[in-house]
Amino acid sequence: MPEKRPVLVATEADDVTADMVITELNRLDVPVVRFNPADIGADLTVSARFGTCPAPVAGHVRTPSRTADLADVRGVYWRRPVWPTFSTLGMHDARFAAAQVRYGLGGSLYAMEGPVWVNHPLRVAAADYKPAQLAMAQRLGLMVPATLVTNDPMDAQEFVSSHERVIYKTLRSTPYRRDGVPLAGWTELVAAAEIDETLRVAPHLFQAVVDKVADLRVLLVGRQVFAVRITSGLLDWRKDYSALSYDVVDLPGAIEKALLAYLDHYGLASGSFDFAEDQQGDLWWLELNPNGQWGWLEPHTGLPMSTAFAALLTGETT
Image (cartoon, rainbow, N blue to C red; front, side, top):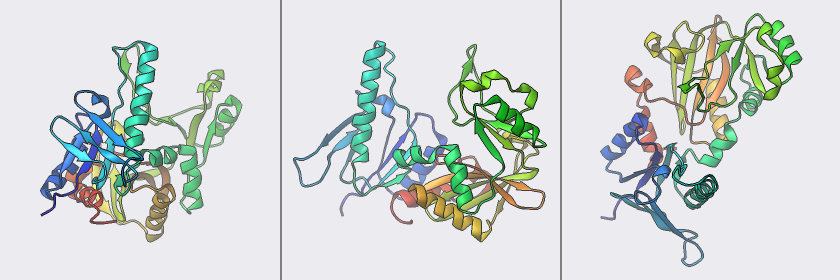
C-alpha cells in the first residue's frame, strides 16, 4: 500500500487549535509534519530544486522527527507561524537573514502545486485590509455600519458627533506594549472631545455602534458553515470569555451565499466572520479574520469544526 501523503502544519509551539486539527488528522492516519519557521536551522531544514527534474519544484521540508516531500504534500494548514528574528545577529545581518527565510522557505512552499492551503499566506494578505473588507461586504449585499477611516481630526470629530455612539477599532492587530505592559486593542467608545491633532499621525477606523443584542461568529471551512450566536452584554465580547453564552444558529440563505462568495473572491479556503445582531434580528457585517480563532467554540457547541478542517486539508471535502 502506498504511503499516505502528508499535511504540513505551520504554527507556533503552543497552539491548542492546531493541536485539535492534528488530532483529527492522526485519527484519519494522515502523516503530519508540524513546524515553525522560527525553528529554521538544526530543527528545520528546507531543500527545493527547480529546473533539474520533471516536476516544477522538488525537495523536502525536514524536522528532527519528520520529513515531507514537497511533491507529495496534500495540504498546508498555515495556522500561526512565527518567523525568525535572529536576535543574536547584528541589526543588518538579522534583517538580511530574516528576509532570506521568508523568501526562501516561504517561496519554496508557495511554489508547490496541488496542496490545499488553509489559508495561502498571499491570499490572507490580500483579504486582511478592513477598508477593503467593508467595501466587499457592501458589494455582496451585506449591511455595513457607517464607518470612517481617516487621519483628519475635523472629519473624525464631525463623524463622531453625527452618530449617537461611535467606536474606535484598530485597522490591524499588532503586538503592542506600553512601559513593558502588553496592551490589547479592544473596541472602545470614543467621544468627539477625545480627538485632537495627534490623530494625523495615522489613519483611524471609527464606526457607528450597532444597537446589538448579540454577536455572531461564523466559521466557514470549505463549503461548510458553522454559525454561533454569542450573548454577552459586552461592547467587545473578547474582553471576558467567562461572560459568554453560546447558541448554534442557522444563517439566512442570502448571508450564507454572500460569505461563500466572499471566500471565493479572495481565494480563501476558510474564514471567521463577525456580525452584530440588532434589536430587529438583522445582522450587520463587522469584519473577516482569514485566520480567526475558533478552537474554544467547538467544546462549547459540539460543532465538528476540527473534523471539517481535517477533511478539507486531506481533500476529502471542498
